[in-house]
Structures are given as structure tokens and as C-alpha cells.
Length: 256
Image (cartoon, rainbow, N blue to C red; front, top):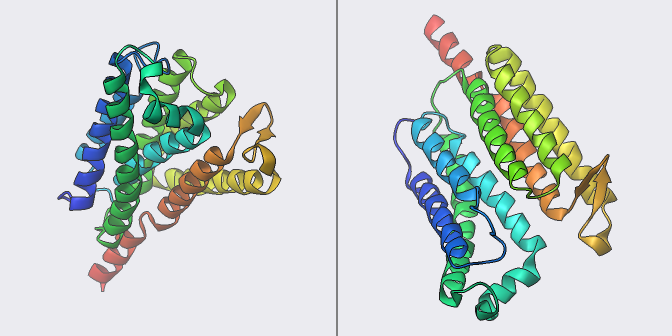
């Protein structure tokens, strides 16, 4: 995968638009962003990873995942999101900026969600014979998770134990990526099974009257978290299972 597909370009453009949208709301005095928001930095970092790692089919999944995470958060805060569209003047000091920023954010999220997933599927179907997919996935996803969790924890955003869990996972993924392709494949498969199990438990055990809320130890999880874990687990399981398979087939064909 050496050239960007149109869907990948759209995903990257949507992430840039999402960063701009959050900065507009912050500059307009939206009380949701009392400090400099770390989100745009993460979005732009993912765009950089997608640009540098274009030969790996799964890089658009990074964009889809971060967009899905923000989307799930928006659903959890739906009443507050609606206020920003219907009565932006009651918030901040620049109503037009809050309204435009929120509309741009919602549109960019939908585009990034859909285009990111579609680009990942398209890239997978066009994948080339690279044997280091799982290793690079652990390195990139691990780095992004460490950066993202460090920033949100420093800003006091979200459940600190949930952030800590993802931070530890990211640090372990980074470490495993330097142990070789086999260790990375096993870590991806194990991570996929863990997150899929976590998602299934949430969807089954969560309180339906409270947005499927439930406790995983000290961690409070909701429907948005379950959906994010479901997608994350599916992607990692697929990377772990299929990474290197095309390389083996390619080697066997040449040996014959």
C-alpha cells in the first residue's frame, strides 16, 4: 500500500477538520474546554501516522477508532450537545463560533467514522505482502494510546482508571513491538480477545436504564465504551490473525 486511496484521504481530511472544530469551540469560550484541548493534537498526530505508515492496510483504523471514541462521548453527552446547536448564545462568549464549531465537529465525526472503516476494509482487500503488520500496529497504536491517555489524564478528562488501563496497554504494546513479529501477533490476538470480551460483558451486564453502565473493577463503563472496545477488539484480532499470512504465501509461491 504505497498510495493513498480516496477514502484514506477523506479520513485524514475529516480528522484535520475535527481538530479545527475543537479549536474553534475552545477559542469561542465553550465551557467544555476551559483549557487548551489535547484532542486536536492527537488527531493531527494520527494524520501524521497515517501519512507515514501508508504501506500498512490498517492505518485508517486509527482514524476510525479515535473518531468513534469521540462520537461515543458525544452520544453520552447528547443533551449538552443539543444545547450547543439550539442555544449557543447561552454558552461562551461567541455564539456563532460555538455553533459553527459544533456543526463542523459532528459532520467531521460522521465522515471520519464511515470513511475510516471503509478505507480500512478497502486497504485490507488491496493489501500487499508485508510481514511486519502486527509489529507496526503494536508500535503505532501503542504510541497513540500512550500519548492520548497521558494528555487526557493530565487534563483531568474521563475516568482516570479507564485512561490508566489504556495507558498501560499502550506501553505494553510499544514494548512488545520490539520483541519481534511473533510476539506482536500474539499480543494483538490477546488484546483483541480481551477487548471483545470486555465489550460483550458490558452489553450483557450493563444496566439498560443507565446507558449500559457497569463496573469493571474500579472502571465505570457505558455503551459508548462498549462499542469502542468492540471495534478495537475486532481490529486487533484481525491484525493478529492475518498479519504475515500473505508474506508466507508469497514466500511459498516463490519457493515453488
